[in-house]
Image 1 (cartoon, rainbow, N blue to C red):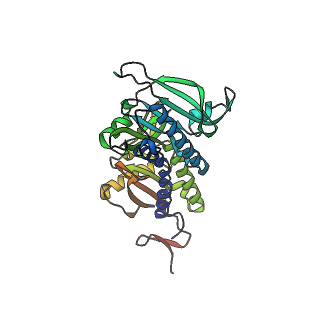
Image 2 (cartoon, rainbow, N blue to C red):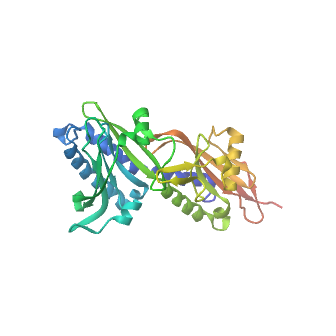
Image 3 (cartoon, rainbow, N blue to C red):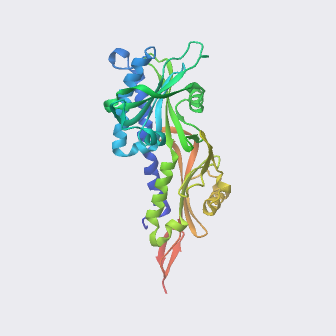
Length: 344
């Protein structure tokens, strides 16, 4: 087989999506800190300030390690939404608003380019103003006073918290928006060392980073074989909604700051993706993994039930479309999906 075939592209996509494990690991880090008794270095929710300081130190170290390997680019944010409405969140330097606003110096101290939010003054009746304070972090994760901004927020009313509170650990069924960019949010249920429910550790995954890498992937295997012009990689869920695509701008639209809407694959504006989805639905109703020839293309599909170790609420189907482009005096054998020389 020639490198860059449809099945080969699926293997590359599997490797790409597996990088989300580094993002999910941050939610497990928070979960583990809560499971350890306080006197052994864990977290107790009744001590919110000490709790946030301990989480901050651990998260900063972990996020900095992600940034060193390049995997932090996949993450919008990660944090903890406690059941009483308090919360804390960390934003790596790749985040759009952080990278555009982070100062090099803040009140005489050098910043790390990482932002930290925390909200701890929750009223007992939860009817008063709850201030989410936003801080820049210095070296070694030191919170730089005073807060650079603040706003009212109740994390328990977010779509992420409500879904996880009901369904348990995993990814949300559909994408959402954050700062006019599409994200996929998920997380894990958190309990303290006594087994009491504390809340949810949640992370946001940047879909446009995945898409940019899909574009590069298609371009790199194209060349003389015409892959860049006629081949496609995309992910579609069991409902027929697109998740990501190697064609920029066709998988979803983001009409609002926190609103991104997936496009339906069968009516996609890209003719190749639309025809491929319709072909898959006509053949097997998206119920099986297969490789087959349809017109001028070889199509390979593979199901995905989990992402980064967390279950997907709506099963994904990864699809690779390879344009058949055999050399002169060759024909395409659809039995073993290879180009073979014509015998006179």
